[in-house]
Length: 259
Length: 356
Image 1 (cartoon, each protein chain N blue to C red):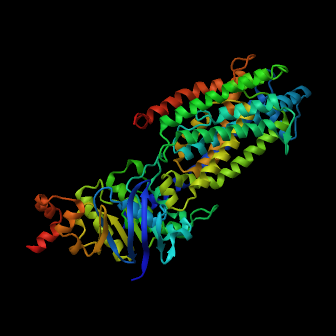
Image 2 (image 1 turned 90 degrees about the horizontal axis):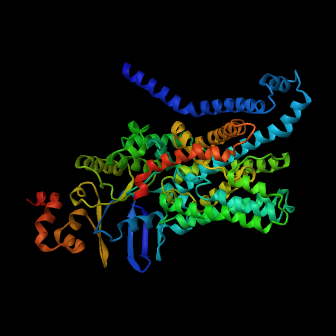
Image 3 (image 1 turned 180 degrees about the vertical axis):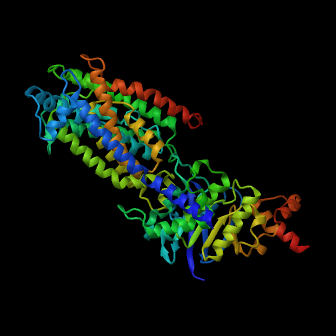
């Protein structure tokens, strides 16, 4: 286990509004982390801090023991890929042209794509089962297809760490299962993953650990079976105890194992 | 097994068509461009038949003295001017559309041309005899005007890293109107001389006047600089289409690219305005038509846009000067008549975004 990303005493605020305070955490290689917490707690902010596109107000973030602010964004993007929640593309790019953008951090100013780039693109698209979509227009894809194509762009960066911002959003249940399978297979390929997740029932079995973020409290880390206990979730999400049964239903895996 | 092989063949032939379509288009455009030049050189009050031209080019049959004067002193400069202006306008349109991530951005619509006219008129009326490093003040001030106005519009129209259509159009409209009409102020200041009034009027209508060869050389140099600068930017505009934050994550220096696009786009706008004045919508029509054929990849669009823009404006200018001969139509009127409806059609297509 080697550390990929280390957050050291990280603080971040949007103006006056403090989002992340005194965060200490480490993402190791071959870890698969589910980022869980209520809306507005700073899950996306944490992911962006890990990509270097946001800089902490205090504290520092390091990639493989080198501070992010000493690295060029191109270098970071060769190790860390970020898959955003929503992408708006104003022109009708094909899926393939879209995925090709994942090679941006490897290209020289005047150079085009080379054989190694095409290889990486093809591999990323086969992995995500998007190769057959390659001539389609990105803007005309369904939500599930779009999500997989965005993953393909991230994988074309040949990253060691893949950051997924709400990968299950807008997916029907079947596509959610496919996405979980994909995350599992990437994990077996040795890519570390951090994904912000709202559907708690999908976490156990695929993710190796859970980072539970709650408002005004330090983040908690642990194995999924420890972190997804109703008491911890009630506290983090501020659910009233009278909804406990519903909460248990949402983490059904645990319930069934308990029975 | 068999169907797998056929599938592989189809796949590769499909890929082949995709791969070579843009080269075919470039070849077709180049041929059309040569034909258009020959026709444009031939038509007018004094006809110079195409075979006479061909003969003189090939060194055989030569032209009469009259034909020679008309060709080299009148028609060719104007043809070259139309080619340069069309190319510069289209490519700057392509760059601005990539920058604003909006297919409606055109140097005229977003006020860049207006700024250039204002700068150029200061150059012509107030500082006519000064030149810097061979470039007349007209060209330099046109560049400064274009640069200033596009920076202003960019600053006004951006909301949270995005450029909503409404904001872009309103900011562009206001800046453009303000700057192009303040050219009249400059003219009033210059009443004492009064010789260049007609120049301003034709500028505001968008006319390709009778340029001299040195003027053409300056503008050609600006076009070459602009095109050369656009080449490394094209691929970056593809990445920028994903949005600024995503592009920044992928290692694009968004701020530098933005500045480079604004500067290069302004050089091209200034080049076009210095010769042709306010010619509207060319930068809108050409990139859009080519996008329908080639897709949105800026790397492929760039050379095709440069050629197609030159071709389009040469044809438009030739029609403008011959359609109602002996009178002449300003070419800007013609492009407005063609481009206006086109602009409205595009606006309608993006109405959803406009209303939100």
